[in-house]
Image 1 (tube, protein in one colour):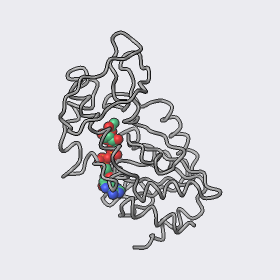
Image 2 (tube, protein in one colour; image 1 turned 30 degrees about the horizontal axis):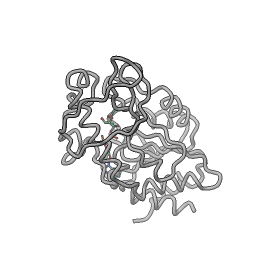
Image 3 (cartoon, protein in one colour; image 1 turned 45 degrees about the vertical axis):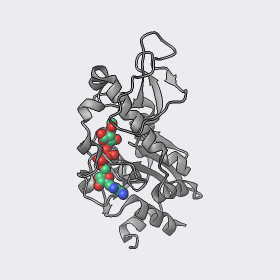
Image 4 (cartoon, helix red, strand yellow; image 1 turned 60 degrees about the vertical axis):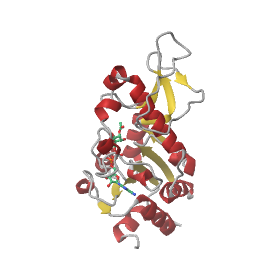
Length: 251
Ligand code: OAD
């Protein structure tokens, strides 16, 4: 499979690039997506019971155990050829590239990407649910998603419990990464959208912002997404197959 002409044209002269990634970016590393019909996390688990502040209040041991399982699952996988290609693209002379990701894994960083904005937080960054202090001590993961584990007491305050450092449904995005992501898409010449269904806002607005500011927007996704009709070109390809071909063509 060769790189489509529209993708070659959009990538060849782009100097300021933003790669916007979702769960499909890490799928070939073995990390489950959310909305895949067979294996997606939200087809097997209930987001209402696991990924909301109300769920944390109602059953913290269930929520904490599930996130400790996800934390462990991500620690045990490796970046795929797509993550590595994005990091190599950033290294090309004259290229100013940043990654904006909805993913809570650290596979972009482990592949070598330097500028990575995490819109939905990170599985490895724990903090107190009351005083917000970061919790940097070792945390042990569990092997089963349904294992109940009582949350750790915050060492900094009296009432707090250590919670996952991810964004739950109903919570606002961390302002730093959102501001950085918005500026990056406003200033780029090319936005490359990889492996997101485009169903979650405000992340799904970023390709539109890039386009309205004059950037070319291309999508890499093996399936149609909510964004496919709004981008300049959709390449039906997986992240680990398409991104290395783009970078090889640029070198
Ligand atoms: P989804 O699970 O909604 O979508 C994953 C997308 O990846 C789909 O469009 C797939 O077609 C595509 N895909 C699957 N395999 C791929 C591959 N190998 N290469 C490229 N694309 C592939 O995941 P997100 O869009 O990331 O939020 O979901 C957005 C947010 O919804 C997540 O960050 C999470 C979730 O609820 C929070 O937890 C706050």
